[in-house]
Image (cartoon, rainbow, N blue to C red; front, top):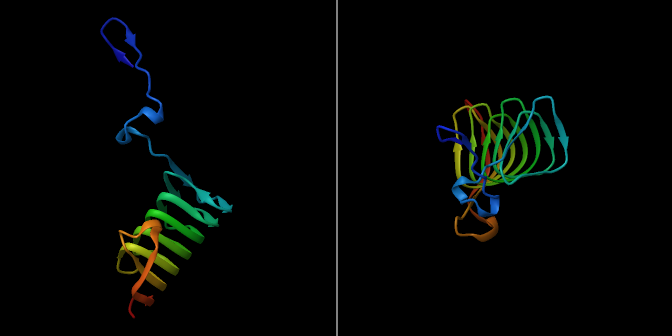
Length: 149
């Protein structure tokens, strides 16, 4: 709405199909600490998990908070793990914060591991030009990274 000094003028919203890409709204979903989900989560937007998820997660950006327990397979553009995760991650970028406790496989183009994070599993690097996120089993392999050892 605009105010032209005399009266309010309403400006109609463009439907999503006609809206320029830079103006499209990204949906954010939050799974609260008191929520347990058994099943798959699929979103074209961002998901933040503070609760428990037993199932596959597919989204644009996934953030696992400090308290969640997630047992699943994850496919996303960006994954940030701050809590406990058991399963497989396939993403362009994966960040393990100092409080991350990961047991499973990570397939990624970019991997950031903060000091203090625990990772037990296999890592594989995805090649940016590989369609469909196919994994190139180049350097990588069994990893066990724990503080002090």
